[in-house]
Image (cartoon, rainbow over all chains, first blue to last red; front, side, top):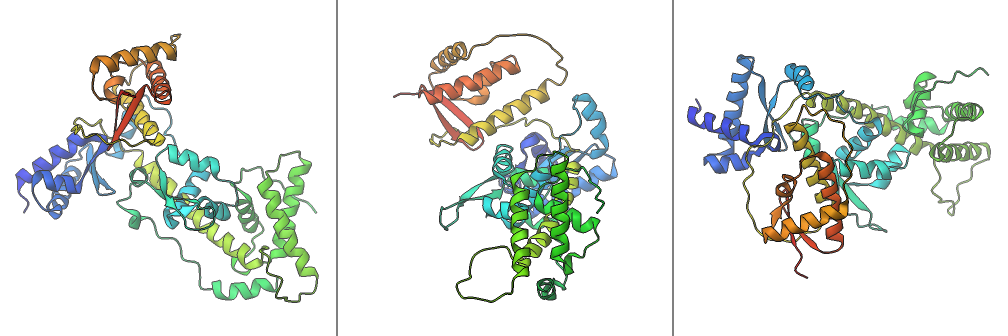
Length: 185
Length: 235
């Protein structure tokens, strides 16, 4: 059983951190306990919220905890905040993000090769949206810039880490004989 | 041959090829490249007849396909010198396969994005400030900081409905900001400065003014964690 005071402290600290969230490490440091204890606290809190139909829940993205409202109250909040239709990402933005997320760090030319279109503009936009960032340069001629996704990316897709990305559907085993067949096409 | 034109926006030539493969029920794993080329070419010709503008990417891809097709027509003799990087069927199929996985992944990501955007967070109530001087110049940090300010502003004033005309000059704002900076006499955070703004217009003009000041080296900026600090340049 978790110490109720720890749970209370943990809840308060996450609440205060608001949209910026607070990392597991800093919570552990402030509360002087192990990161595992923090995980346990969050679990207790989330169960408690669930049982009481609370408007809140705690989410974890990139080792950062945030107290967020549940999706059930989205509509009323959107009305209150006078939000027009939820802004979404365009298909080209999503495709580009998917390529970077699964193959990072990767260069623009890899994305272009895969998508078959010029991606200068979309990459610039994604950098401005803080969804991707530069991650050094590749050691090949021209030393192209490498890109990787940011922690903000993990947040907007609600991913705890890159490992929690949905697994890609593996290409079927027909792949091997595929090359032989297509040559005779 | 009768050809039905579907007016859909494609994300690129590969997207179009995948669409054709699906529509003509071709098997991606046993792809008949020449059928695909015919379909692809017919589609582009149809687009041209209908006076649609065709992006160069589609044409360049078509050129690659046609080159492949023409190579099929002449007897093939492998030569050691023939090592140019033209498109072969393997790479087309491999690219199509990889593209289709990416496309699938992007659909999943989209629903994840939509799901996440239904959760709101409140504005941070505490921002412990630790001042420690370290000069780091990155334009993107300024943009990020500005975005943060705008989001906060939007969240704190949800019910603003106003139509006003205001003229603000960046030059005037530069003077005001410099006065503000001099009266402070030390580093001050961007958030602090934006607190003196009473409208979105004022924030935008202030941001332009700051950019101008940095360009003219009348203000220096320091970047720490997520916060930008400004101060009057000593030089």
